[in-house]
Image (cartoon, rainbow, N blue to C red; front, side, top):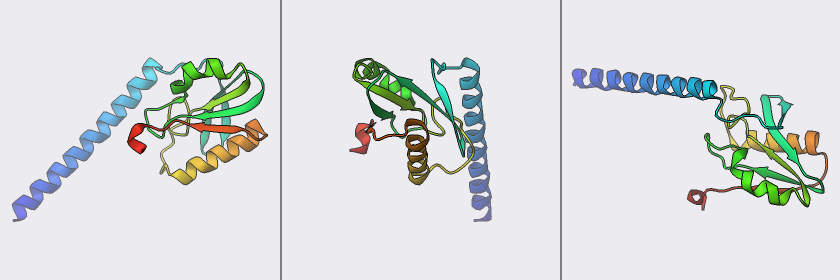
Length: 140
């Protein structure tokens, strides 16, 4: 029995260590390749880190938010922006921990993202807007 418990803890520690090093490797190689290049974007200095956003077009403001997934970014909206910017001022942002925004070591919650979006609207957009959020079909 004690031998099984030792094996369990050894395998658990080995799995956790492997996951940690794989995550560090992925983070390092993503930074090296600069997969998401900052194109005509700005950074909003939020209390928990810099938030990457773009602003295009003119007219009534429209805020586009990507899916809540660590591999998501505002790039998801690239084909839609061209059509929307003809009639709207289109804002896209990379949520904290995603895309080109800061990735601090903290617990990411829905409440954190609500605070971020609220502060972004108040401090950057500054007026009433239309908010669009892309949802993956797995959320439905």
